[in-house]
Structures are given as C-alpha cells and as structure tokens.
Image (tube, rainbow, N blue to C red):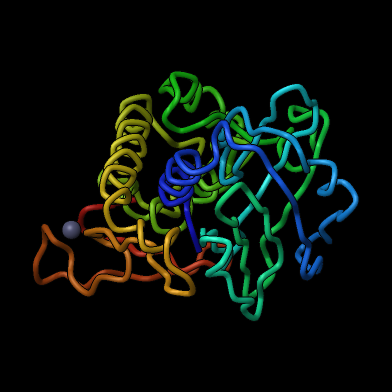
Length: 272
Ligand SMILES: [Zn+2]
C-alpha cells in the first residue's frame, strides 16, 4: 500500500506531466471503486486546464483554472497512475478511468478497488478530507501539538501516531520505525509520554518521512511510467519485519498485535 512518501513522490511525478495541461476527454471504464466514480461529474472536467496538483494526506488534489470543482484521487491499496501516448494505449483489466490530454492519456488502474476518485466543490469540507490531522512535515506538527493531545489520550502510543485525525501519513511501517528511533515501546499508554520523548518522536517521524520521500523519487519512476509493475520503494528499514535489533545484535525483534496490526520492536531498546 502506498504510504505518504510514495504518494508525495507520485504527486510530484504526476504534477510534472499534467500541470497546465488541458483535459480533452474523460472515459470512465469501470466506476466500481470504494466509492463509485461519478461519471457525470468527471465529464465536467473536459475542456478544463489543470492549475495545480498537490497532496493532502494520501489524497492527490487536482485544481483547475476557472473552475471550482476539484478532482481528488486516493490510490487505496493497489491504485496505479500511468501515462501512455494515446496511440500506444491498450486497455488492461482493472483500468477504471482514462483522462485524455493532447498527446497522452492518464490511466488509473486499481486491481483491488480500494482506491477512489471524487469531484468536490469544497475541499476543506469534503467528507474524506475535513477530519484529517496536521501534515507531519509541516510546522503545525510539533512537540507542543503532540504533547498537548497526548495528555488527553490513554490509547497506545502506536495507535495515537497512526490516528489520521491527529497526524496524517504515519502508517504501520513508519510508526514502527519512528518508535524504534525514539526508543518508545509501541504499547506504552499515550498519556505517559514525557515532553522529551515527545520531542524525539516528532523529530523521528519527520526524519523518517523526509528520508523516505528523498529515496522514493528515484525508485518510484517506473511505477508512474510503466504499467502493472509495483515500484513502491522499499527503504532501508531498521525494525519493521526484521529478525534482530540493529543495536542489540543478538536480541530478537518482538512482534505484537496492536489494533490487529503487526507491531515490531526491540524489548531492550524500547522499554515500557
Ligand atoms: Zn535493541
């Protein structure tokens, strides 16, 4: 599943291709996604020029010149965006949406159909966007912000940082890595978090995500350009799905379930 760094990389690549380009035609091949594609609304985008492409959480946001409607795309678990020259396009199984530009076509393909495509007039109040927490790489995500919220919660710290209403984009892999770097036990209760640990956690989350974005750019190109071949980068992970702790070389990494998700940690580095 693409996490925030992958979506950021995809956003950058898509932006290079479509910004300031005019949509000639759209074609919904199969509307069945997590939420059905509203074909009529997508048709309204024909003749419109894309003003900007950005990211909010794991959503790609397309804004248009002289038009209020915004196109929002979520890749779900297996969503792929690819580009083809119009004459080279051949229909593939699981192609859902085609957007034609002057000389190329934008293809949204999704095998498992957990992705979604929406058109909204009011981004900030759109039902999937309005409750999203702060962006992890923004100034709004800081020690004070996280510390104040942590005092009010008693869930585990791993659930807390993965809660998209608190901060967006910290998925299972990055949560494990950030907690390892901060030497925090994933099952520790959130209200036990000290200010010092909180500071370390905020900087670990920012570091790991920025590093992943930097690395993602080079390996994910295939993903956007070619078809069908997953190119989500696998980064040098320290603890996630590892056998031994990189610090305590003989200590086996522990894997416990928190909210049904595998949670890897070192019981020597990360004491509760
Ligand atoms: Zn260790």
